[in-house]
Length: 133
Image (cartoon, rainbow, N blue to C red; front, side, top):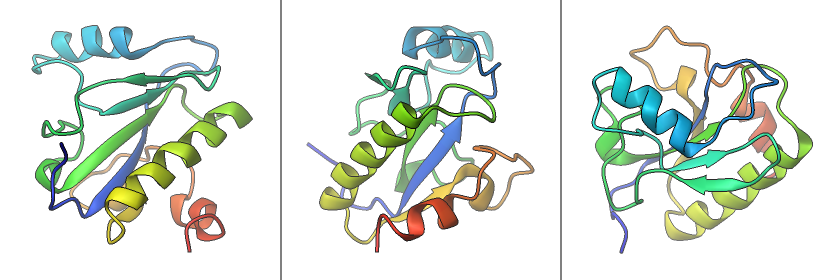
C-alpha cells in the first residue's frame, strides 16, 4: 500500500551529536516530548547504516511543514559527519522510493521552502546528481 501523490523525497538529519547512536525509538520519544503524535519520519538511518522504520509509508509524515501530504521523509542520525554506511543506506532507500514514485524529487529539508533549517547540513542536489539521473 502506498500513497499516489508523493512529489518529494525529503532527506533530514536528527541534528544530534555525531557520536550519539540513536535510533527510531529515541526519535519517537523525542517527537512525543515535542507534543507530536510520535515519530515524524518514515525511515531512520542509524550511524551503523542500519535502517529502522518510523511511520508506515502509507501514513502522512510529520517532517515538512505544509508538504507532509506529498512527501516521504528519511532521517540520518547525526548533524554533520555522516558515515559511508549511512550514505549507502540512504541511496538504497531513495532508489526504492524512486522506483515507486519516479516523478518525485529528492531534496533536503532545507530546500523545501518555508523553513530556516539547514537540515540535512549537506547539499542534497549535488550529492544526488550522479546517483539519480
